[in-house]
Image (cartoon, rainbow, N blue to C red; front, side, top):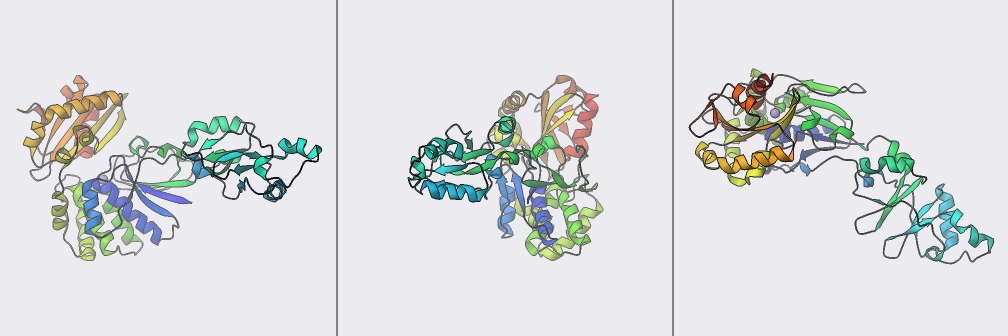
Length: 427
Ligand SMILES: [Mn+2]
């Protein structure tokens, strides 16, 4: 069964790199079919890292919804319309199914071959050597589209009197059959979460798929599980630090590329060990990785910094969404976004467009408020653009600066510094 390793939505470098490296480790320790994916678009910085180390970038995936095509039963044959009816009936008999889909010359779905529909033909001693396409076929079958999410049709399918559902693609081409019992089965893949554990922050569709492992350095707000799962959490500066530690614990050495990829995650989350979230574990595991990689953390950080910031390279709507996390706290729904930018003046100049984009996001996501934290990792400061619930803004301990933003001297971490203040402001 396939296992996806995936970080949070609007993924940052730590999320993507830890997914890549953990998939590598799980593959080495015997997991057969494991793939690192990225929840949405792969950011330019991440592309640079994979390119720099000559590694295959993780695949960007919009969601992990189970779709009709995942349920197609490959053991159920399709009947070509031009074979003789008698051959078709032999195939049907051999399959053990009560009906089979018939595929027209052009690949389209022509109907279901079902003995009940042929009774008249048998009783009238009709010719069984005619092509099956000319025999009476069953037409009222419920035809499914291969790309449809299963959750939309599960209830109707389970209630339906049919046991066989022919599946077509968007062009009407017959793709196979889904058996009714498939709707009751477990999803055909599993998830490993890195760098997050809250379903709200995960890839869409996550709520449908069993999670078998979590590796994370955030607060724990994970739902109760049915079975034991592997859960690795610690208070360190990056998830990549935890993955590096896991390599070491089982005596596996990351390759040069994987070591570099892990370093990229560590230095981007700890802002090259300047963030207050940094721990000794981050520093010591990073120096182990530097030896394996042959490149310094500083030079990898420098390479990543050369990539344009979201503020310069993206539209205001995409920029505020590029690293935004959703929270539900004290009955309020809100988003906290973070952008790194070493030119604060550039941020001030675009404040109005960004405010408008934030207001659109508040409306689209039915939020109570949205705070955009713009962080200058070089000077070690942040500024906050706050929109929405005025009472929360007033309760925050930051003063208003000359540019109308809230100034946050020495604040670098959304998780460790901003989020606790926001939660305090809500109570
Ligand atoms: Mn992280």
